Length: 118
Image (cartoon, rainbow, N blue to C red; front, side, top):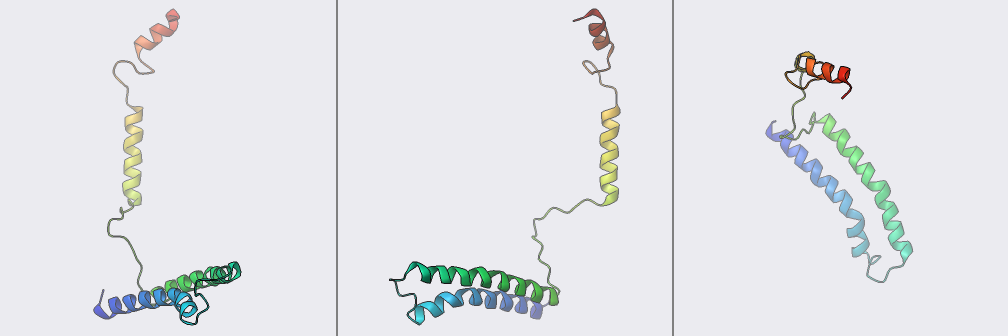
């Protein structure tokens, strides 16, 4: 990722955090949230955040999409390809179909036990 793209991603993230902090900063600086507030004041603040948080998140997603930035954690496990999945399934089916030695469901010992009534 180029330097300018990283700088733009960092700037968008900082702007989003500033937008989320704005209601509290405005409320405290204007004296609206000064300590002796009623329940309605906190309810209004909660409603502002209920609308603001998803709007900021959607805006971040749109801007990151425009920047062609798609986050993927570095420790994420890679999904196996179709061929690898098919090969693994075939291997498991092969192992399941193999005759077992000793106490399997289709051994002679099991058949003898069933016949004798044990």
